[in-house]
Length: 213
Image (cartoon, rainbow, N blue to C red):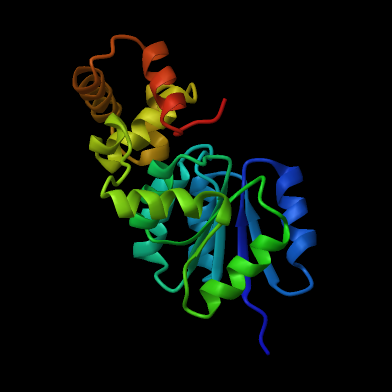
């Protein structure tokens, strides 16, 4: 039986090494990325069967990366492995095209189970949070992200790069837009979110999982 081709993504080298050791017997590891933009490039290059990714990743967060992957590499099955247990993140992940969602405190064997499940055409949600999702469905209360969900993908990209300390010129180069356009998006963000400083934008990005602490 052909092993699934897996592309790994996480911003911690030790975590990537752990995934690699866990999966190398049952999967073909085609590459590893430590930020969202590198992940997109490697996914288009290798066309993997499985992509593991985190919510909080440098340069491009996992939710927005998943949206792009779902569009540009549609045959890749996306599995989130993250510290974010909030049901709103789970909801956004699956809206972005995820097929699996695990927590970093899940048992290591769960990642293998998740890969087997999605390769068989099923979704996988760790039991650590599945119960809460069922309760929400029964009560009709679907959790949603806070104000961050109202931002456009481009606004979220600019917000994340601003919060990570990039200059306007650096953001313009990264997004292939003009510095003037970057300034426009930054101003729009501040107006829309009623924030007034870069520090406030950074705190907002941290609170909403666009960057990690």
